[in-house]
Length: 150
Image (cartoon, one colour):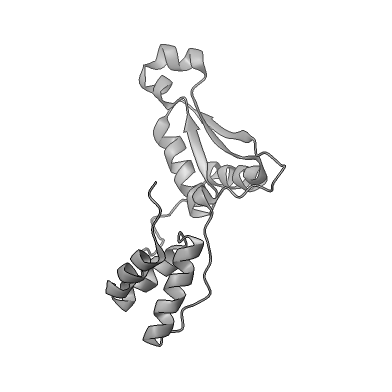
């Protein structure tokens, strides 16, 4: 990856509209140098940005020295079911991964033999993920005909 100089960043941020610069700032993925240059650009424009909050890639912050293991929270022979469960977990801030999904696509005999696909989460999210999956399977999030969704 090519290193970007302070001058290049300054020129790039200087050409951005205030809205574009704020979007980059709020994205949370700036390098330390980019944060420093962006702060200077905000100052030149007389804008007080909110505090910068760096985001961790994929929301998988692991304490140093403590490797995170992936644990199974659901298993199914229907990929769509796992995708919906994964989407709900994602909405709750829990990253998840579907493994062996292709075995389900090969047909029922192979899928049965392989045990279906599995939905995995990092061990630090296991308790919350299992609660959410149990609530979903119990129908806690199901809309009724009488519910007003408009």
